[in-house]
Length: 175
Length: 451
View 1 (tube, rainbow over the protein chains, first blue to last red):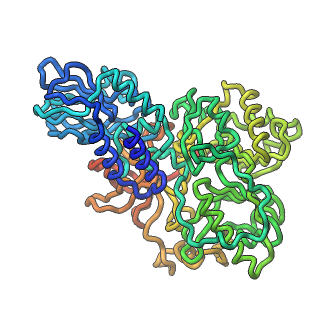
View 2 (view 1 turned 180 degrees about the horizontal axis):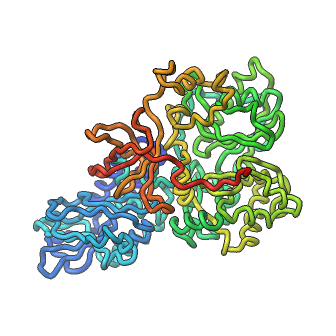
């Protein structure tokens, strides 16, 4: 984990040092390394029995039909981002691959991508958020869900259970 | 796409913001961490005068310097982030950035700006020296008055740093420069002084590195400061107008240079305090006498959104070494006498830029303007496009305006598209949003001026 953290830090430092030439690539690299150095992560074959969390602070939950996931950002992320003022939702019908940026959350201080851990098709979006972005702060893991995705059956990787995610955020805090 | 990043990256920084990237969080730059390379290496030629206050503030094990107020920030729940080589509070636990922003516009906030570099230039050559390196009307600057200005590169007229220059006496000037440019500026001053003194009267350059600097900002600032002054000074505060400075005893601390102004667009004061200990005691006293009902700490986060609403530039983002004051829409800082006679670095480039080609000048190819943007905020690095979709400019700062409830930004556009009301677009995550060129400041400034 130490390696990953320092890579991410390096990426962030590069940002700080060269503000005019921020490349996405540094972050992509950091993320790619992260995913490749994640021995604790589960892999599930399109089955998520309970709510799962990603290292990018999204949550997903599989519906009773066994193929439709609901995706949102975690309470931890919502609180860290601060007052959300705009959410860019994906379009319904959009085909997406795991790791894609499917939308964005804008707070006063920053813009953050929403990354999907699931491949498939967006079948619904939470339009309430367009009118009331505050719902994302008030109920990020409930009424503030972002979209529903019909999975294409490929494995969903890099997910954590609630306890593991909590430990992960505590580790992040400590760094 | 400069402004894109996963939530994890942002969450990380905010939760434990030891490494704050700049593109996304415009905040940290406030904190100009950018340190463009100086063109010369002056290290081998130290200035003749030995600066008297070379003592830097304590440095932590992380390698970031701390201002005298570091412990006080932590005590008040400050989330510390690196900025300009210092560990600085981005916000405090009692208020969100939005709340802190509004608090400053409605009540008063105290900002630690001790990371900024303070200097005194004095001696028979001081006025001439400053008139060579800046376009300011130094001759016309009255005692106790100040002006926004820029340090300029010779030859190109590019902006080395932006600065405030105050005249404290016939041959004495107080100069404040950006923390993020500290190394570059020191190299620049060293080199420039060496050249100046080869054939001009001497200049004494004193760096006030052990001085604290705090900004008291917001509509309640004057009454809060007034309560911390001896009676005779309290009465004179009403006659201290925007841009003026005077030495006062504040909260029992003598010799505090009180300058009316700031970086928020509100009425307020910047207080230069002659020692680290006095900086701490002054802040504690101001906070306790004003009470938390009126005065709170505010961090870099609120400072950034406040300055953007006030249309003020942030060096390293809205200004850089390749930009001239005319391109940066800062022609107003070029003194009237300087327009006639020049005599400052880059005047041969800058003065012709002030006139269009039709009028015998060279004009400029791009200008800094303000924008109001529909739907989503346009952040630094976002491309500005015309109706045909061609790139015609770039955003350098942007955020949702907390005061106005709409998205504001500043950036550069091609000459001719800079007129207020011009309809352009910005490409945010692949979608073109409407961006209207808008006069700045976005929020009307409330400076204390002679009526």
